[in-house]
Length: 366
Ligand code: ADP
Image (cartoon, rainbow, N blue to C red):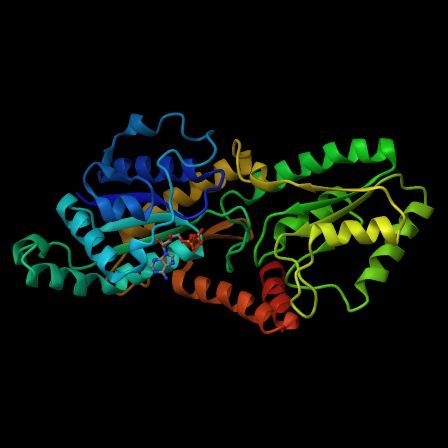
């Protein structure tokens, strides 16, 4: 009987609960035991009551709940080997040798590092007499399976992350609300949406709401963007449009990597385009609330696939991350997905926007 641990880590996203529910129930269905690790890596490092056996009923009602009911945290201790040593001991004590982690690229990187160090960590626990050879004998390998929970849709090699479509829907509703008042007063609104290195939310919001102008990190606007934006906005007004909506991704910057702030955009629209302009920062509204139907479905199908991946894992298989590509649930190498994700951020920092867009484009087309 295998014991499978499930946890949520890093920033929360709608649909994480559905993933936990699916992992717990699929584990039980396959005659394994399921354990929830509370508060992300904090729970792993602390152990004891933070790691609880889950029964079928324990996840009842999880599917429609936003956020993560088993908690999440950013855990500094797990960044250090000492913290991971505590985590290893806690897992062995509970008899857990497989972990399904739903989180962002940081959480998944930490998980794979943990897997890599696992034999060394156990050896050290025996040397320091915290565990015996007998204790560790059944735990030669640690299986890690990643599920991507993030509203930003910022992981490479998957079309969607758990939570991104809920967030997009919420942002669109908010922009629709702003739209009505903007039209009434013929105002312009600059709306800031989340996304550090990834402009997916901003771009898709723009497409879905018919925004006038969008700023995303991967493709900064051309050098004369200030005039360009005002010209486009004025053109739209001349065509009879009574409102102006500009979407600014929080990670937006110009070609010299200078941050483009909503307030700077507002000043331009006020002073150069002569528009009565307001700024709306959506903030954590984008992250909260109930998961959309798509995210519930994605979380469920991917949670099921994660348990299948655990059951089929061999010591040689590299840690998988569960992705969705062209509507199919697939496994990809966790390390490769994280590496490609980092490559986008690195390309942006090196001002190689062509490369950044090339990497993003590869995710959309053949
Ligand atoms: P996300 O998973 O959303 O990207 P973070 O990057 O904050 O969020 O990571 C969440 C947690 O994962 C961190 O607080 C830390 O405990 C763990 N973690 C992140 N990166 C590493 C790493 N390189 N090594 C070990 N643990 C890590």
